[in-house]
Length: 193
Image 1 (cartoon, rainbow, N blue to C red):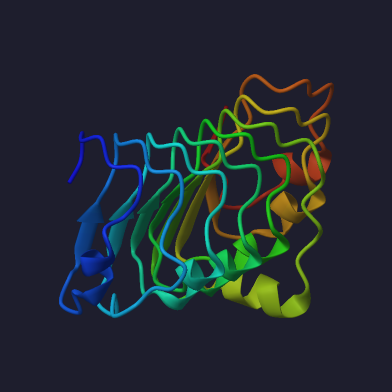
Image 2 (image 1 turned 180 degrees about the vertical axis):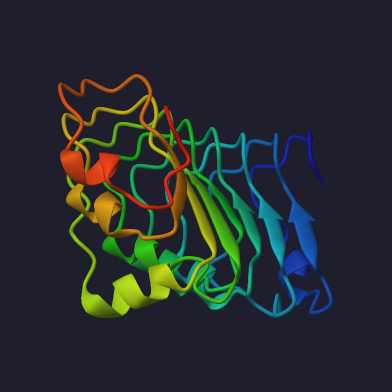
């Protein structure tokens, strides 16, 4: 259903209980259904390049491994995003997001790696330091890649230095004035840009 002129997700889609992948990118969708319906096997959802201003809370009820919401008009992401324990890849770049939900530290806690791309947004607020439960969940992930490039970060969020398995961190094109020593001392950080 990619590259069409859809403004809404057809109701019949939410009745497809065996659906594993849903590609609605490059449309003109302004809202998603109010409920997930029977999308119990949905693993891949691509709703990039639409006109979405919000993501419903039910997104966290899915067992997604890949979620792409690039190039929309999102100002926020629901806290329920942290319930996506099997998520390998989250792409939310090029939106209007100003703050990352604290629950983002829980993403991918049931998988071996996690790639989170939040570049080209308006993120300027701090990510709160993870609590002990979130830190344990993050540490159980084998590899973590975080892209915070092209935002409005004046300092590197403290919570970043608490992610023991962070392998790649992209902070390109932010108004950063210094790099905290904690970042330099991260034992598993392989690439920083």
